[in-house]
Length: 326
Image 1 (tube, helix red, strand yellow):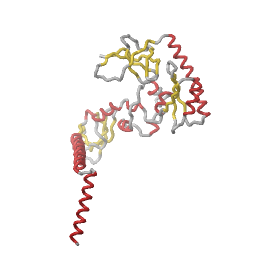
Image 2 (tube, one colour):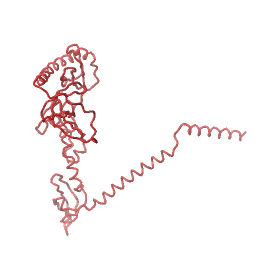
Image 3 (tube, helix red, strand yellow):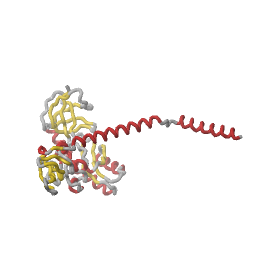
Image 4 (tube, one colour):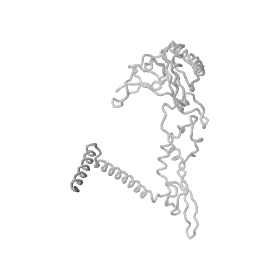
């Protein structure tokens, strides 16, 4: 078994794993650790956790030590220096007439590196800017171009729900969000309503998607024929959250239809088995078609030697044909 602790360097940032070297840390403790960027000051987000040998984690570096009062002072001093560096860099960007937007500035704990995060719609040549910044701050300068989602995560804001942005407050990583998730939840496909401040699909579309998918599997599709306590009918609409179905049932001795609302437990899916069999058959047909294409491809020679052999055979045939005519 391997014992690790989780350390985070930014609010809602990614969690990195380190070896506590047998020391018991508490959640919320500040520690100094060594990373590829140098010595960093981070916060313990989960304490000593045992993991099995089969759980592969890349090289786990040891914790240097628990942060002291002097370390806390250095950390807050770096934060004030970052604000000054932000103002200076922004001024230099304007002076160099560069098409880039400065988002954030970050000092490593030991001041061995100063990182500037920016966004831009085009490729930016900032070599002269880096030289000038290096001469001012007398340390290694690194400029990193980030995307719109990372920009929003760093800056923060208020979502359309009235709460702080998920990515800025608690999300460690960005998850894949697709338009299909909005369709599965019967949401309006208006881009304004399902997009966040960053202009991308809202991260919260992914939260309940699995629950919606599981419920939807139990419900019929619109226009599907189902058996209800009132008789056979056609599904008009489906309410996923309430697990209810609105069905148009033909009245006895009448040509009219009446709409009823039923719970999903009160109806029977008539064509579900038939539909599932058709889907399975369609999948099998696709696999068979793909297999036949691969076999045909393998049977046809495409190497150069075979092509040359065919050309030489044609030439011999033509020459023999000419000799016979003579």
